[in-house]
Length: 252
View 1 (tube, rainbow, N blue to C red):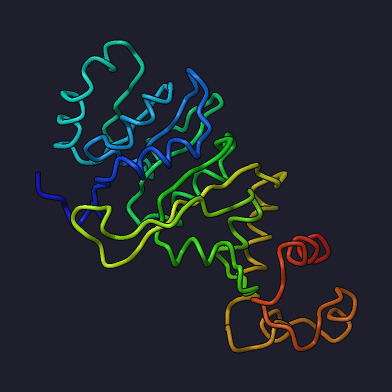
View 2: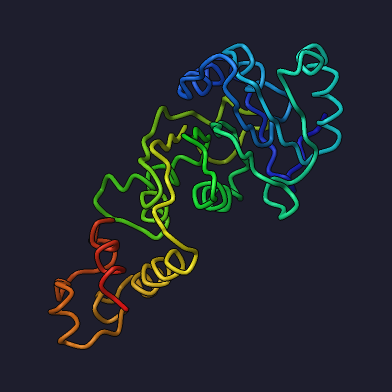
């Protein structure tokens, strides 16, 4: 079938990469794995081979039919559930038991996927996601330059890059290279939604104007700047996660 550009479909066609993604999840026999956008089932096959109980959420109804035919045996054995629908829809309920999130996701919903799952009441124990290479590198911030995205991921878990994946491993070939991002030790550190909103309001305010100094973006008085220990010439991108956590605790 012809991939649908509107759904960001770029099918993974490399068995080597699919196997590596499944391997990065360290799957134990019978463990629940949630897969978003299974496409034609390349990754699904490897997850099942690793012993996972797979819950696959597919938005494209035509692909649902293909998956049901391709994995009829696994479905009948109750090792695979294929659920038609949009995982970002409010109608979709996340698993209530322990699970892992492993998927080759459409890149235009990367941020929304990470936010929904990591900030949920029952986040996955770990997430292994195929994302755009530049996005993965921005999340790790190895150049020492943080961003709203990197802070948003690190507040919930520990990110790392498992491998980089060239564009030739997909059909149709995308315009960008990819990377397999793994987020471990996922935990929602906030005691309430209000506390979470406060933290992100402060972070977004700090990053509001990239060229401005952090003190200008935050709009704090000289006394507050000294009280909170904010370097006068620092910019938001220079400050690590620990700084933002500390700042959020101090600002009333």
